[in-house]
Image 1 (spheres, rainbow, N blue to C red):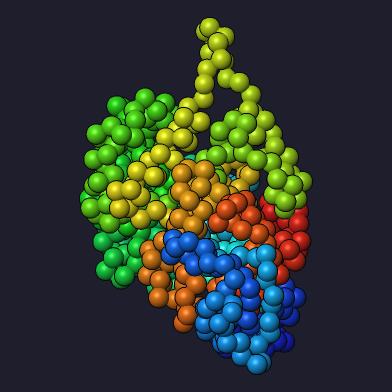
Image 2: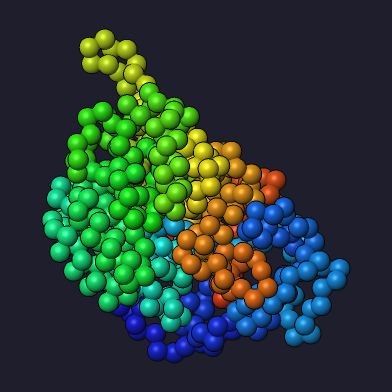
Length: 480
């Protein structure tokens, strides 16, 4: 790790933002010219507007210099011209529930500081928020290496260590007991460069409130995967974002006690007896919208818990180490087995399929009410969600949920940039913005599965070879 991040002495000049790229990064570069013209390409610009056929996009100096109909385009004489008939370009994805760690069993996580950055970039994810760090020092060093051109990976918004309370299921999380501890933790990590925080399952209202107040004083946002605190309670405390959606909101559980995290299965089993159209859930949605609280959709990680649903893709399995692949497949088999009532022997439906469908309906209702929906993958769960691939799957599931392909792409690009306060730089294909553009073979506006056919990912105007990035980490997920 040290050798990759810090040991590159010889640097190769790159176009774009004046950055230099190490030989380690340069080997993944496919297009590296001062000016590049993407000609005869379909453009999905990220605003939710209809796709535009036969366009020319000019990239210059790390920026999008021009966008116009191909017939009327003025292509600079010194441009490297790519003829992209049959291709589509979209903005770089903005992943809003990403991690640099992977489940290793027994409530322990391993940092994937080599494979994950490359896979995010290969999948078209050019900006990420880590949304919870197990090794924040490593994440900060990764960000420094990426920004310095020494590591291939996306632009990173590093989230501090989890803001957790007593009862954490993993020893890798610090348990904050008092508001004073929360304030000290927030300030300590902001001083070291993090720009977001994530609260977790067992945090108390007093501690969360203090953390939010301290973070907001310094212009930093707080999100949460909560259990001990309901969504409306968190909104009242000033939280900016809530992760995962309806299935993790415990406020409707009949046995809910203040600052107590109930059993997840019991919560979902009760929740699925309700309807999204019920007044309590609708009231909660209106409350979140009124408080300007975003929701991050992480459908891929929950899809894994729906029996016989998750697609098994060769590319995902090939990315895993043998042990990681075996663990995932064993977990999947167990989920797909029927569950029987111990008394009657009858097959008992698992609540997760109904909960997953309900969460999809909730996200649509949240957006319809004016809420800001973000997109992420969350590479945890039973181990079958892989960076890049999982971000693409999230967009596909948003379409399955009921959004049009261009709406789903907007959620995964424009909305994330808006939340991060970076819409003036990223999130859409607009002249003057950062040249973060994904070249896709096919037409995801009519066939969303084509979003998997990423060939070149431009970040700051430098075009990275997606297949080469993927091949470089074959068998490494679960190791490094």
